[in-house]
Length: 351
Image (tube, rainbow, N blue to C red):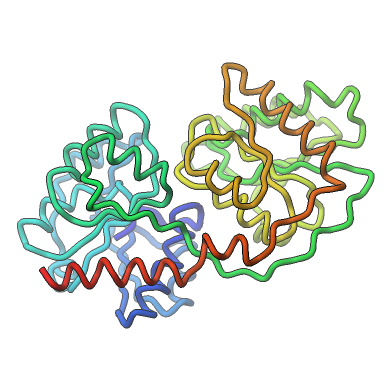
């Protein structure tokens, strides 16, 4: 079960999880609340898709959905194994326990606040189901809230890639922010850092990539007003994929306003021969270390920290050499994910 139909973040990783389960020998059905881009991607990967508008999804932006009492639909009652994909589906855990269904959580959140703490303590801690965490940072957060370490399994997202040679550095230095424009992914902060430095950085260029979710248009409008038609900044909106812009880029700026559970964009950037820069916290820091990204402390002045990171990347972009495929795939390999998944499922079946 998954509460989103986009192809960002955890939804992207879901495609790899489906492939891992299929490789082990399972037939996989993914229940989604509505049709969307993820639907066709799953179907192309051989998964069955069930659209269920009645799925109860926990979201801070729509807490009224939590008031909808979840009912265990027939497709869950008939399943041999249920995967609650992200904490947004944790409301179903008590029902699965009552039905004595085998299930596990796959956690891709790092909700450092009262909402996340209450959710984990109320719905994850009380049962014994395995919990897959997408980074050591997420596992540590869950353990700190009372989830037994014996239940926790860190499984980094697995990737398949064709590694490209880095493009030859040009006279221009092109920076990109890639992600959903929701006020949290750093589009505004990176733009402010960029504007604070370009008076003596005439070769710099900034690409802002992404669009808002419905209801998040105000965040996009804020960024658009800040850009104000500046000729060194371009608002690209949605793009077909990272590959479509990678040959233009020298650095991808990953500076969300809160620690992230994992950093997908730095790995995608590395595969395209592009360096990444970001804050040295959360699961993203674990990724940046592997792909030799620029890491800076968050600090009290995030805009200044971002500017320092951009300067460091600019000064070193001609000499930077991308880490080898072996160095990266040894951490983010589909084989490692399959092995960990097999071990957990075998333990579940033996109960």
